[in-house]
Length: 336
Image (tube, rainbow, N blue to C red):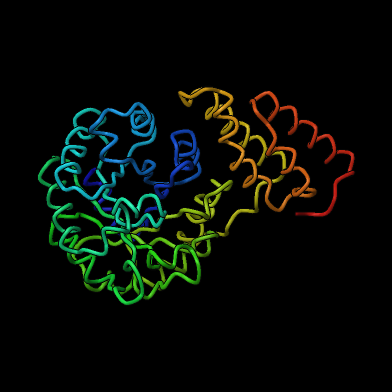
């Protein structure tokens, strides 16, 4: 992460971050979001164990295009030594702008291995991991946290202070606990509490679904940056909208159906042709994106049923072409 970004985090211009999301924030989507206004992107979270053991899948997660900078690579794990080794390897081989430590993922299979938000059950471990990573890399180290493992252990300021004291140069807070998963409402007042308590920049994350949400988060919390996760699904335009709202400009109208599908197809072609995977597997994995891109469209529910059967880029292109013909004919069901 360049000093220019740290200066931006402390300036009046609020940077927008694409959150690290497994199966979502891959390189094709990161590039799309950069084009639509994301200032910083972060990789999918990558297992330190997989990095150190040379897992081929880890290499696919770690690769990025120069056009994506500034970019952070996010790693997770519960062994400070393994995390340090992974950070050193990532820094030397891939040279991102910063290394981010994942203390936020609530997914069961990650937490079961004491990774992600599982680490929040032991704040001494959190501090040891951050110190080990900081000592292992010349790059800035940042952290992404939740407010606690569960309600009794909820202490976002205490967790963040541990991260800062161990050397984290920036803290991103998703103000839910691990047991909350994604239910309820993100407590933005906890983001404000971090802003008031920490010396390093604080990035807010959680419940940003529109451009106006990004502006409200900034205004209500004083956060130095806004990170967008689920709000970006099938919607890279959210960064354009958020930039306008944050800058006090009118939020642009939503893309029409043809623009939406043009971007969807660009995303699909890049993900399937250049993703480094078997094209049929890549097409099946892209189905979730197709579901997100078609949300709220006329006849969307029936069309999604079609799209969830596709096994190739050619099938995706053909079904979208057929859908657009039905749009022209006016023969679609209501929005769904």
